[in-house]
Each structure stands twice: as structure tokens, then as C-alpha cells.
Length: 456
Image 1: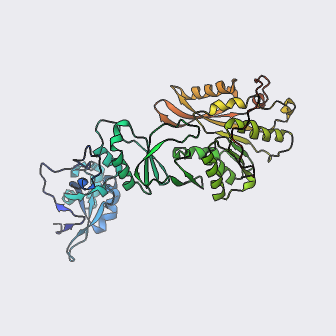
Image 2: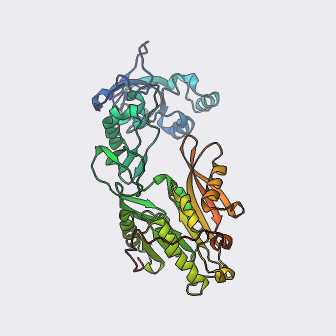
Image 3: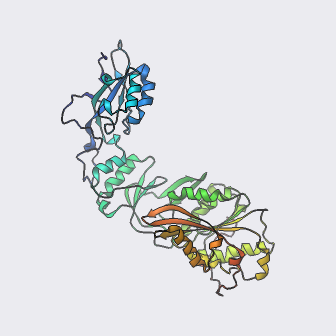
């Protein structure tokens, strides 16, 4: 016979009945629009296993896949017994996985029986759970409309959670925001995007649906710290791995031209890797935070120059001047060093490729072209074959077939059904940069003056 006990964590002895509730999903809260945490308080019936203390470690290794996983709840707890009685532990199981002894796999039952644990150790108990015990996705599943698309994911940028709510969920936005502030670690602000990115500076209209109206964030990425005002610049945490992929291609002594650099996720770590970096962004706010981040990360300013220019002007002035000076011997590169050009503006970047074609008119420099230049251009590819579409976009926009120069086409991430963010990597050869068939066009004046010509 097992000793008498009192279950810890507000448990009550369960007497089986037809009304016993084995579901972990909160009930009676469907359609709630104003968060009422008290309505999540309920008693649920869960399976337990009573285990002698000395056998606990072995039993846990067998039973761990079946554990009851709730927030702020320990699936293994003490059974309170009389001081003279043997010590027991109580293991709580997920009622959606286990409702009776025979729900354990045959192998697990056999292993338990070898530890002298059998059906006599199995029982059901009623425990009290509250709002604090449920994860955000469980709450959304219980509250939001059934048979409708729910909240599939969100982005976290520092202390900000960024959501794109569907129209049918807008009336629940206050509740959704409060739940996320409660449940997501370090979250203090929840915003809903109210418009698409359709302006020059790639930021978007947003609504604060919960928490503080504080957009100044700090983000760690690529061993660097980035600070910026999220309401005024573009930052996508889903691109962190892509930033790392490009940085892995750079070596000390290489040169990086980052045409649409934002606040510096490519440029700052590249400079820290001892690459020479020319970083540009048209958005004055991005430019401001780019320079701030360079200083905060103690970038060697001899390796870092920043610009606040239109992409066309940056190509036709800064990049052109550097490569011309290199061919003329006024700039030097470490032996074996490469030049890299990142163009992370997927909505528009391919449209700037035409400015590389025939960029240098002095054909006498043609024979001095002895350095590999790699371009990494990003685009949105919509259709059945995103790889072929991305290649075609590059060829069409550069104005000639450069398929033989394309070294990689990579699917960065899925944006929406049949819409992929792609990266096309190609070599910028002398046949492109000295193309004599290019139209003679007057170079445009700078739309934005380079407000920092002091190697910052």
C-alpha cells in the first residue's frame, strides 16, 4: 500500500466522473476582446505517477516525453507525507498524451515495471491552473475565432514585438498585445503594421497596441550591438542568418560597398572583420544610426566611410572613383583581396544594376582589371520558379545576358505564398563595367550630399 499524502500545488483528490475535463485548452473565453485574466482560472484533471524518491531519476528518463508542460509549473513535485513515511514524488503528465496507464508505450511500461512502477502508481489528480500557466499561443487558440487564420508568428526587435494582424483579428488587437507583453520575455511594446513598406526610406506606419510607446531598441547580431529608432528605419530580424552568410564570404583586407546599408548589419561587422567598408543609405535616420553604431562598436574609422546618397549616385561616384583609382594605382588592395557589393533593397535593387554597365568609359584601364568583384543583389521573385525569375530579373535590369557570370542564386526566405526573397550573386566582369554599347547618359547630381567625408 502507498502511504497517505497531500498533493502539492493546490491539488485535490480526483474521483472519476463523466464530467472530468482532460483538455489543456482554456474554455469559456472564446471571443474575449478585453483581457480578463481571472476567466482563465480553472481546474483540470491530469494523470500522475507516484514514484519513490530513490527511483526518480530512472523514471524521469522514461517518462519525460509525456510531461505536463505549463508555464510556471513543475512537472515533478513533492508529495507531502508524514515524517515517518517513505518519500514520494509526483510526476504530472500531459492529458492530451496520457489518460490511462496503457497510453504509455509498451516499451515504456516494461521499463517502468522493471523499476517496480506499475498501474498501481498511476492516478488522476485535479489541479488548478491560471492565466499564468498558459503560453500565448494556447491563449490565442482559446480566444480567437475558430476556423480562421490565427497569429502564426511575429518578429521581436529588442523590446518590441512586431505583428501583421489580419483584418478579422483587428478587433482583438488590444488583447493580443497585452498577452504578448505578459508572455514574451523582455517585451515592453507591441506594434501592429498598418501599411506596407511603400516609401523611399523603407519604414512603415505602425500602431502601438500594447505597452510603452518606445521605439528606441537595442539588438545584438553578428557579435555587434545595434541601436536605432525602429519607427524610422528598416530592420528585419529574419535576415540575421543571411547577414552571417555574406559576412562568412569576407576576408580581412577585402573591400565592401554596401549600397543600401540601413543601420549597418553588413557594414559594421565587416569593418570589425578588418574589411574596408563604404556604407551608404539614403534615409537620414539610417545614416545617423549607422554612424552611431560604428562608434558604439569601436569600428576602426580608417576602414569605414559612410554616405547619405541615393544608390545611383553612390555607384556612379563613390564606387566608380574607387575602382578607377585602383586601376590607376591610386588605391591598393591586399594580394588576393576581393571587392564585394551588397544590394539589400529587394523591392528595387535590381533596377540599380544598369548603372554598373559601361560605368567606366576609359577603355585604357581595361587591361588593368585584375580583381574579382562580386555583387550580391536581392529581389522579390513571384511565380512558380523563383530561381529562373530572379536570374531573368538580373539579366533584364543590367541590360545584357550575364548568365555565365552568375555564380549563385539563393532563396533567402519565403515572404508569402509564391513570393520569395532571393539573392543573386554574380561577378562584375570587365565586359560589364567597360561595356562600350552602353547608352551615353549624363551622370546625375547627388540627391543627397555626402554629409560625412571624414572617414566615418
